[in-house]
Image (tube, rainbow, N blue to C red; front, side):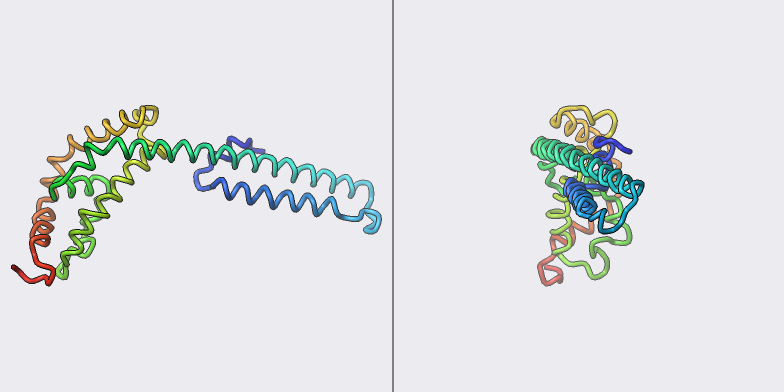
Length: 204
């Protein structure tokens, strides 16, 4: 049987899910204990099987409880690291202002954004789309950087302090920025033109 530590490392399982499974096992064990062996006329072998089943369910419940605790602790550590990485981005990623810089950042995180005129940037494009792209959507990308860094992170940054990890990621972006701005030059021009248009969508 897997150890609580092994269970806690399951990527798609949460602390709440482990806790729920533990409760289920405890209820099953309690139900077995409530059986009337005499009334059922169980043999010694059958009673032994039930005792063993109850003990096994108790052990499983105990491991689920421990896994839930470990998972919660890991989640708290990850959330704190994510928050610290995000705060360390204040003077770098958060300071990006130009369309060219923001598009480059978005393209580095979510390159599919600009495939086939993504986010409504096609023939019927609206000013709100560009504003959303450079506002909330851009911020989502920054949150994504912090989350991915805290959740896993590349091998060379996962053990770094949050500020140091954020600095490495920033430097990597700076190295790629010129190429990304060249690659998405057309999209950058489109977005700037869109932002320059009045809300009605007709040229000023």
